[in-house]
Amino acid sequence: MKKNMMWASIPLTLMAMVSGCSSDNDSPTINPAPKVEMTRTEQEMVYNNNEFAFNLFREAHDPVKSQIISPISITYALGMLNNGASGETQAQINKVLGSNFGADEINAFCRKMLKTAPSLDSRTKIMIANNIYMNKGYELMTEFKQKANTYYDAEPETRNFADGKTRDVINKWGSDHTEKMIPEVLKESEFDSEAVSYLLNAIYFKGNWAEKFKKDDTKNETFTAENNNKKQVPMMHQNHKFNYKETAECQVLRLPYGNGSFLMTILLPKEDRTISDVAETLTADSWQRLQFMEEYNVDVKLPRFESETDIDLCSIMSRLGMPDAFEVNKADFSNFCTIPTYIGLMKQAAKIKVHEEGSEAAAVTVISGETASGREPESLNATFHAIHPFLYVISERQTGAIFFIGQYTGN
Image (tube, rainbow, N blue to C red; front, top):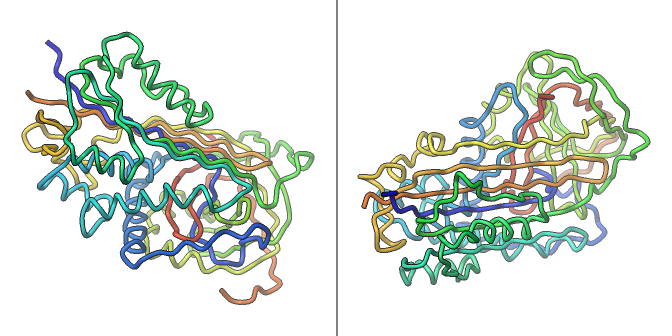
């Protein structure tokens, strides 16, 4: 007989946020963003969660292939599920996600972004939604349901998972809330009609560059891929004022979207460095230091590209510090429902499109559990030609919260 399954499936979709917690230099004055008030605890949560983001990227990093991952998708997925955890299991999840105080701090961070992000720029579109599907015959703990509703606006819905329709319902919900960026949340081989539940979070963001690339300026040019192969790629081009700086490892360019609430920060390794070298230097502290940039006249070349990633997160999250959640005899999700549960599957699918108008990105995190029973800018010039592999970060400017980290290698 098949084992009962508890699934937490979280589709998180973002369309084109640009990375980085940037200085105010690169924020357009038209349609200014409302100020985001952050308590000291919330600032610490963002700082620690960004540390998790960089640790995650290093663990998931593929030295050859283009890839994209969404740290905040995992934060939403585990944050919601964490309200059902207890004891050492919850303590480990709290630590991995960067909460020094407890699960409610993670809940508050997710709530802040859920309510704040959609109102930051009237020229962008962002949607955040959460949902819980329960299998007929199982019931969530009362406190878990209350927190799911209070912090995530989730309304549990009970269905008969053996009706032959539930997977289609879940996939349609994910597609509808990601503008079809993630059309299939659960593959047929991943869906279990005996699952206890599926938890879903979707985020969709669509925005255009503050300074668009002209399509007529896009030409095929040579890109040197990570394996040193030469290939022709459509290379976008423009010359404009952007925030820019250099470190010993890389050139750093910040491209704002819309009114500057969301930014893409691109880190281009210098000739004697690799993406891995740059990734090793990224911490919450170094990320904060990168935000102090100067305004340059920058000659920018950036590939127009699409890439997607499908990655197993079980071993990665275990190595990051939460092994108990994946072990049948150690996992403690006693506040989730009435049956013993542990995480049996955790994976993420993500996709990004970068083009002349802007960017679009989406991520879906799926968790399954089984039961055993500012200074004045100078007039400076820079050349930023991304003609070899680079790393990029997508984040919200005021809070500094990182939504996506990726790399383009040409492969």
